[in-house]
Image 1 (cartoon, rainbow, N blue to C red):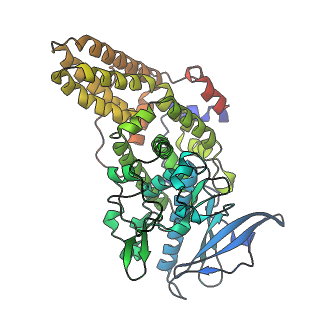
Image 2 (cartoon, helix red, strand yellow; image 1 turned 90 degrees about the horizontal axis):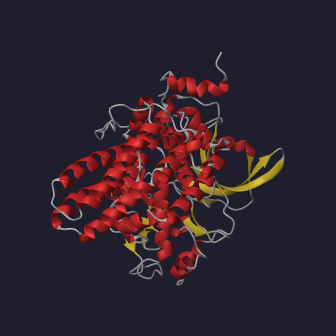
Image 3 (tube, rainbow, N blue to C red; image 1 turned 120 degrees about the vertical axis):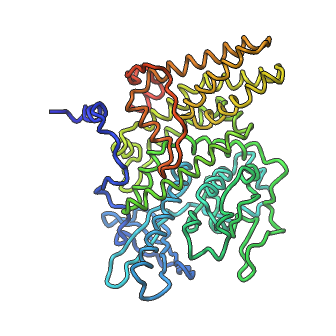
Length: 509
């Protein structure tokens, strides 16, 4: 009989490994029971599509916490099954969006959706934990950028970037605020995943809800991204469409404050850290429909891939990403990620390990810290050599440096494979050049080739490599990047605990 502690090892060695996360049914509920909440006496806020009011969560006859309840109102008194299904989808989409903010940014309020089965049409709601000291007037503060730079306001660029990633179309002044601790937070994600909101397409051009490199560099302003509300810069005027606000105090400065940019680069780094299996597990927690969970996961992963490609072209980001500060930010984030709970206080890392048989912390530390240094060092060496070399050498180095930049942004298995192949090709071409810098460059390239060979010999079995390829490839069946074998014979030994950094051991234990 196989013991529980050896079960994962048995499944792996038997190659019984690839399970579709979204086909595994969990006994855990995906939504809250409205009977556990009581309404306050405050007056409701009523809109055409939803109504909001404050509620109290009750547990064991005691008030536990305060929440804001947003009820999704059907357009008719006798909604069809299709309309109710759309209401459920909207509740799930908003919850996934708001929880994704919380996954990356701890100050974000916890969000859940609720369903009430009753006589007549079912009732669908979104519950958001009340934000202490919620104040949306901070956008009119003329000293906003000074407050960001001195650290008394935090998280502005983080919120804006995640909103872009999730295709937010309605980031109006009432949906973004500062809390009692100086953290800028985002609420009401009803128009995140805007490309799915067909009933709102009249308010915006769906083709322009698509961020670009220029949009990220222009934050808090925008270039090509066109939501119908964006903080205090653009606003929807009823009957007049979207207009710019000339009187705003938020006009982006010629050069964004350094702290604003550092927060932005930190958020890009954390987003690009997330393994795809984690995203699948995350969306599956909140959706009872496996196809819906899969669809949302695919959408988020596509956006992350796009962000990775853009970030690799941002020199200032790469400077941050190769810094000691970035390494510390990653360590701090893993400490938070280890405590991230979803429905019913279920830990997301535990769930991912159970359904996908991967250790998320292991992936993050191995990719982003343990095996990162040699790649980072070569990137800096190539920059130095380029400054001193002739055009022929530079012509060889530039494409290699660009591919290494992609690997620095997302040091995944496939990206390392591509870097390895380019290193070998570049080395062979360098040997044919008559250049004083040839020896130094070739030595540096050979060092990284040796490191990557050693890395794969330590960490990759045949099964692990196919799993890494599956993780890196698009779930939609899109064309995959060509894979390259690192050597003819691959040692099948796995990373042992002894090979992991001491800090990582501490986090796991």
